[in-house]
Amino acid sequence: MAEYTLEVTTGSMLQAGTFDNLYVTLIGTERQSERTQLTSFGLDEKTGKVGTYSVTTLLSLGCLLLLKLEKDPFHESPEKDWFCSKIVVKTPEEDEILFPCHSWLSRGEFVIFPLVRNHILYVPEYVSEHWEDDDFFGYQILNGATPFMIKRCSKLPSNFPVTEEMVKPFLANGVSLTEEMKKGNIFINDYKIMDGLPTRVIDGKPVALTAALCLLYLNPEKKLLPITIQLGQQPSEETPIFLPSDLKSDWLLAKIYVRNADTLYNQVISHLQNTHLLAEVFTMATLRNLPMIHPLHKLLIPHHRYTLHINILARARLYGPGRLFGNTSLGADGVTELMKRGLSEMTYTSLCLPENIAARGLESIPDFYYRDDALRLWSITNSFVKAMVAYYYPSDSEVSADSELQEWINEIFYYGFLGNSDSGIPSSFQTVAELIKFVTMVIFTSSVQHAAVGSAQFDFLGWTPNAPLLLFQAPPTTKGQSSMEAILATLPNKSFVGVVMSNVWQLSRKYSDFVPLGTYPEQRFEEPAALQMIEDFQAELSSLSVAINKRNSELELPYTYLNPKEIENSVTI
Image (tube, rainbow, N blue to C red; front, side, top):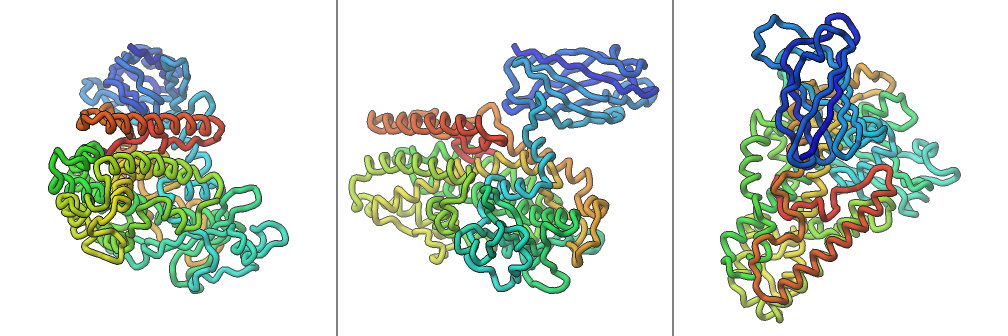
């Protein structure tokens, strides 16, 4: 049994106490506690009162993330609010965690608190402290929920008229933008895929959405910093280029619009389309074309676990009119159009990580932890797949002669990629090497890539100003006119934020039936050679996990999403 001790402090003002029934639920990375009643006798009419309580669970909850507090809505006494000052939780691991509240609670109302653990901030708490910082903006582009947009920039796009004079103050002394581009120190995020998308209509007016361009500089201290932002694809007097030297609120607002485009791209393309729906294509093709005794069925079926189930649930809850995605800046029609564009741009190269990284010129940019961990996982997965496929397909002729295998890839090509030969997706396999590469991509997409975009959601989207899915105001058309009040008016309201936080928390957590990458709980293979290959795969993943933990112990903000022990074997949430 695990015991959590709670010290609950009532505010010091008059009439702050309560006699109502109180309930608390602790929510951790591994599981959550039962809804536990707290006696209110220690929190009566005396102000500044501290009550001590305990919450007992069968197992540890893991790292505490949230606390939910409720007042009983069925109490017979007259209506009376209670002011909760703070709650300090002492865990079985002897950590003391502060949940600051400083709020009045009405009957039946619940509050979810941020936390501070032993004076060390954890995400999204780190995000709430650093979201305005330029270096954290650059960090997220590499290691946040969407590390797929950034490219090395060797020549400025014609519609992004950045001049040497504009950026000179932000570059190292004595160097020019042209020189830094030649050195490979200039990068760009171009959200042209968002240009002209239909958006949600509120009170008869379409919500603004910007197809932003953002230029970034890798400085001599090896920090990636934004140096120019244009909030639209067509330069004009009403689409100025924002700079770090502009009014603080101007620059912050420009970054918020970039983060809005980036977050929408993450949710619709990076996460939903390129992992969930793509994994569904692979799952359906396997179930329809490969019999249970087929070696590829045995190899892939653990990586298809629960994928159809979660996608059916997503269709019911997340996208469509009136659902979460339909209430973002895009609206239901915008989501559909963005997915069409995303599919038309999807290529085999973009799905195969080594080629993707090379095509974007990102081989050497430092502190790119997503790239480092993902490439190692691609290599480990590829070695495993190579051994398994070569065992069952000793020659190219056996690959080309397998009619079930050919039907499998043909269905993926025609139903998943609409027969688009420009995508580079094969419609048949002629060699063992072709099969190895494709199966590696299937497993990688369904596990590693999904973990990279899914597990990071709450950490980065949990602090709404950092990653808003909805903005109410149009982007600024002139400089020097913004304010913090204008920024607050631009950000979404509390009700929308609450829905988003609830959903991204559910989509980011690890559930009790979690199955880590490389685990094959149902023994479908009987051959000793195949079983040994699985053991070797698991050993390689375990070694990588140790290496990642060692690296993370030295980082201010650990990158944990691609630790093999944290990667689900399939798309399940």
